[in-house]
Image 1 (tube, rainbow, N blue to C red):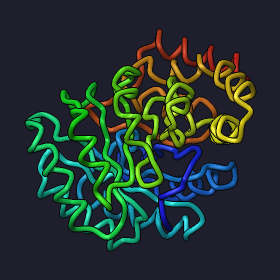
Image 2 (cartoon, one colour):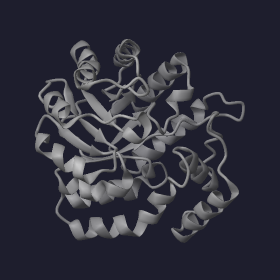
Image 3 (cartoon, rainbow, N blue to C red):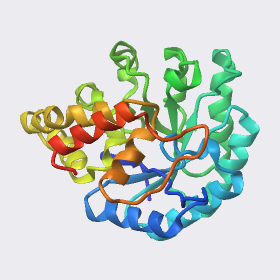
Image 4 (cartoon, rainbow, N blue to C red):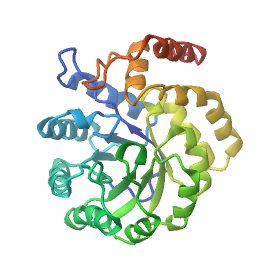
Length: 295
């Protein structure tokens, strides 16, 4: 399934765990069905929200295979294969391609970072080696580095790099790379709270944390905007903006998994170093969910 031309809401899917910390594959299957039945346009597994940073490579591959099999071609499946080691990212990318993923999400080289040329080679090493499309992922708040505009311009010309998840939260930066958007290079919001502004720059949609709890609303918001009813899209956006914001009261995915558990979805705990929310933040989140009619 191709990613070119894809629009809408791609859920940054959480990974459910049992109380002992093992992956809850039964619940994972339920979540996939929940999203497909509620209009989610694509599924990203093993991203930041999916806690891949605290999972083993063997667990990552098992989750990727499971999601691909459960989805069974109904929507595109994108697997987060990023690493700050280019060779590791390449190995994971090849494994996820073999497992049937439709696309890959490639993060910038965090911690060790890179200069502009090294960052370009980091992404192109994978894009040259695989036969499925790649999205590059800019999230400087997590990685400590941002993809230079000049590098985005080069990457946008690569035939196997189909777009970018832009999660800097910096609309000035997003505007500087918006000229790269075209039929072969899509811009995706990586922050729910700036989805509408990103769409105004020619974005294709959002890779969403919020969609974990309100997939239908997220899908509708994007589609209303893209099909011309910007007033309706803005209405949905403003109605749920507080929910979106409060899913980041603490580091993601602590609040969204907490919210899902509050809503009775039974997705289990996080893995250390992520732990339960503070009492004050949890109370604020519950109040926001209640106001939105979610609990």
